Image 1: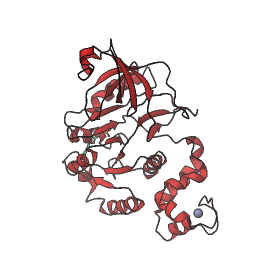
Image 2: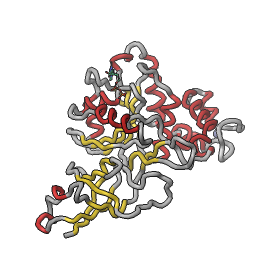
Image 3: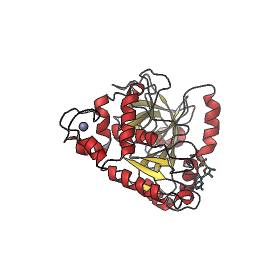
Image 4: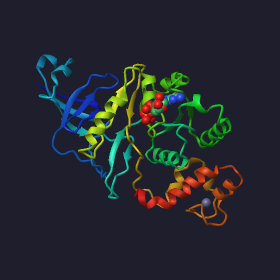
Length: 325
Ligand code: GDP
Ligand code: ZN
């Protein structure tokens, strides 16, 4: 008989999807039935990891009430018939400048942006860009500072300034060390019961951290085959992992940046929370916070209430905004 149920997409391999009925991790394969189109997106992938979908499947009558998953195989996959509206999503910057985009993941409870103050040295404009993207797409962001064992003492002042700026802007910070295990429990707790995106430039220890969270996971193993695949295809497939301690994470191997689409110049400052808060006092509206007289944002920067680094990231984004459209 034909059953009709809901599940979450946890993986896309190119030829098929893997679904699970979260929070249970009962993986089974599925394919798209017909053409599924979502209104208002130019995404190259109509179905992404994290999407909640309705599927139909042909299973023996005796299995229809439960235990049908074992009857769903690559020879008899479920058929995805519709994608439910997304609460949010994150897209990847297109490699060319076309308006096409690739949805990395949908329905995220939180994005953990893994960074290091040093080893490798933090690139603030890049971090700020990721944070803006999270604001634009409505994904709450937490900054995870990894490798604190290496720089907590040598960079104590920078670390303190970092906390002041980013916690001041409204972003929680978790200090961890995948090496010593410090802070890992706290991160594990923050992941529990949620679907989280893990992002960070290569070398910050994202894989080590995922492994520290759950030793049964080894993101680098997948990455090697992805690199192999990338030689032939330009698509990277993202995947959701189940943490033994509870919660699900979507790793983003090889991701250099998220993409911003449909963001106008005068909108960028709306996604810097500390600028947004003071901008209602600007004399002009809209105000680009650059040359306008009576600009409350510029005044706050001069008074040291808004970080000059954040403001300069903002100016950089205004300048380069064309690239992100
Ligand atoms: P990824 O590219 O972000 O996935 O980074 P990896 O997990 O491969 O780590 C990059 C390098 O940093 C490796 O040599 C790790 O052993 C090292 N590393 C990762 N986390 C820590 C940490 O907390 N402390 C120290 N000292 N080294 C770390
Ligand atoms: Zn202004």
